[in-house]
Amino acid sequence: MSTLADLRKEYSKETLDVSLVSQDPIRQFESWFDEALRAEVLEANAMTLSTVTEEGKPSARIVLLKGIEQNRFLFFTNYQSQKGKELLNNPACALTFFWPELERQVRIEGIASRLDDKASENYFQSRPRGSQIGAWASPQSVIIKDRALLEDRTKALELKFKGKDVLPKPHQWGGFSVEPLEIEFWQGRPNRLHDRIVYYQIDNSWVIHRLAP
Image (cartoon, rainbow, N blue to C red; front, side, top):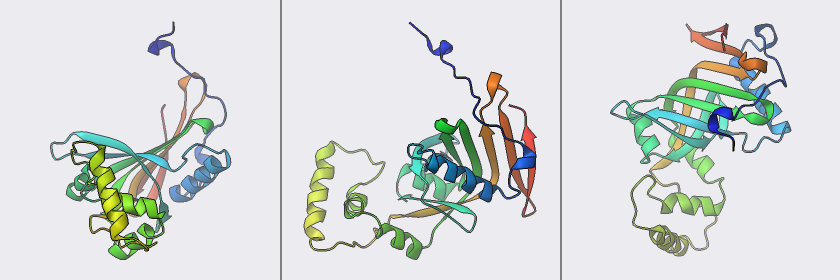
């Protein structure tokens, strides 16, 4: 029977070099993301969002990237959830994408800002009606007795919004945009000698370096 220590994979699909990447990390990300879509990576827009609690403890969960606008990465959530509260208290955060089918990872560090209500409302009302109801029904991150509470709230909201395909946005729900300050692209290579290219933002310009694996 194998053990965790025995689990390993050899990476050999692609290479990554400073001379071959875009000078703009956003364009480089979009290029890789398009490749992930063409490769039919499962949930290519899934990313680990890492935040920091008031006590300085790291906190992480998977969320979905929902856009890139003005060189910022967008996602949506409940502002009263744990991640929402943490970002409003300390906007420093990190995003991590892992696309195993391509043996690639992208790591982004940046600062989150709350989107304006109009942008959040536009996205909210573009979601399936069931998702809109779900956002109203769930007191996200709050301890609840059982699932019946969610089901009861959903039924009540279905009656309240009966006949309406587009619901108003809950005041506690909306988006964040993350302005990147550092973006690292990781390409798996043989013998754990992986390729790592990092972009640092300095004085509104991007500086590119290779990192040791």
